[in-house]
Length: 416
Image 1 (cartoon, one colour):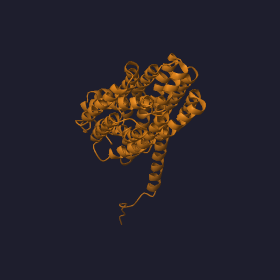
Image 2 (tube, rainbow, N blue to C red; image 1 turned 90 degrees about the vertical axis):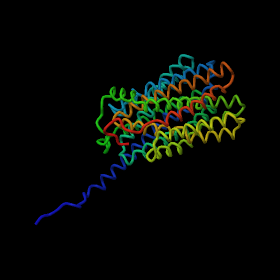
Image 3 (cartoon, rainbow, N blue to C red; image 1 turned 60 degrees about the vertical axis):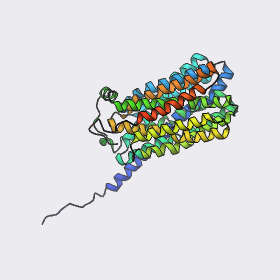
Image 4 (cartoon, helix red, strand yellow; image 1 turned 135 degrees about the vertical axis):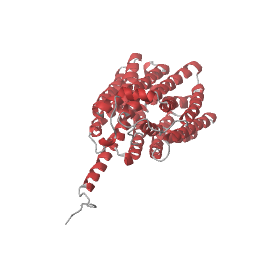
């Protein structure tokens, strides 16, 4: 008599599935907290420009230079941080980044001279952001999830990253009002340090580690990507995103003050951007699993540029600013899960951290020019209008650049 095992179910299967769901939930939560702190603190810098300039004889142009340098350092540091994460895991990278982030904020708090501002806000904070944001967190979450979970997991983390902006922008403004700039910067430094231990959860080996394919040498993967026209178009479009977001995030409060609109409206607008970014990032991240992400990027850039054109063309008020903030929030960081999805489809998951980091250099070159041009425009012309026009033009250009991107894979093992 023969027996057969066909149809017999392994009784341990439900337990394994429960462990997998629990594992990815913990990774998503930890990644969201780290990204919230890294991005949330970054969005507060526009609130510090006027108080520091008034109290410490550091001009807005000098502060803009420091924050522009921060964007550049952040971008140049992302490929290194991503490659280190690909090789060693996120825990040591985030730990070093949190210490640098806090040290940079503390330097400006206790020695707000020009060189200290450049070293603190510019170099140390820039390196800290590189180690606590996209190339480290998003890549770690992407590898922790299976193919069915990945779009949702990345979407949730990208959305959760905006919670820090919702919470920390009002906290920064209130501590500035109640206790001054120094205390506010110290509070932000403590927030950066507080989330560092959560990187240990990202560090855990996940049940889906075998699904990501065989890792090739980082240098070879980067050279292949840089010969890919689609990757180059994606990076060029990401430049526009960096220019727009950095300019608005840093200079919108100052623009409103120049238009005789209360500073509290600026803080409210930044917080509102953060809140609606939760919705937008999640929606675009989920959509990346259903539609070609490059076309979603083109749509996002076109909407953002159109909304900016309408805002600049109408009289500035609290109402128009808050309405503008809602549209910006819905399109603010939706670019991140979409860009991540394009790179994963083109070049796979094993070197995703390094490749996203390389693409992010384009984003931060845009951020560097966006912040710097805003400060220079005010100093030289007394107006932000030239930079607003540039923001609109490069937004429409970015929409056009994403249309011809191809979605075919350049690697044999891609799980997108």
